[in-house]
Length: 171
Image (tube, rainbow, N blue to C red):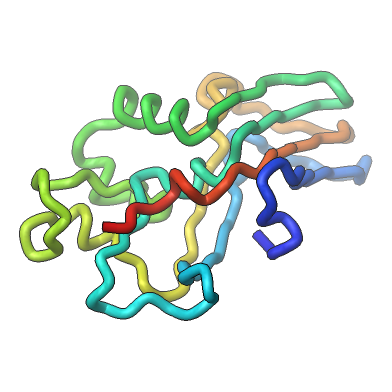
């Protein structure tokens, strides 16, 4: 997300306008590349106790909406909280060992933020640039049921930016 979309309430719209385009919404994804920095735009040191929360990327958005030809197919408010509950209920424990690595989902293994004790906290302890891929089935329910190709229809994904306050832990 570029700095012009960093302000809470900013809308990020991703549209397909081409009429000769085949898409498969259930298998699409959002690719996000970010770097976690302090408010003065300097990097965190290895000794700083800071960690990205589980499902961090979804906490960046207050609202998500998917439309086909101007008609809302599905929308989701409080995207971070809604998808965190969905992941906890939907996916098995071994989810964190495979697909979840691309979605920043690591379960805590202890009740402490000490990196040596809590492997889940240690894995999410991102001090460098990170790249994550989030499929729409993670935040839109229709993608779990609808696996048809869409052709010649305008598609629109709108994400409304939230603050970063809930996206990472500073201890």
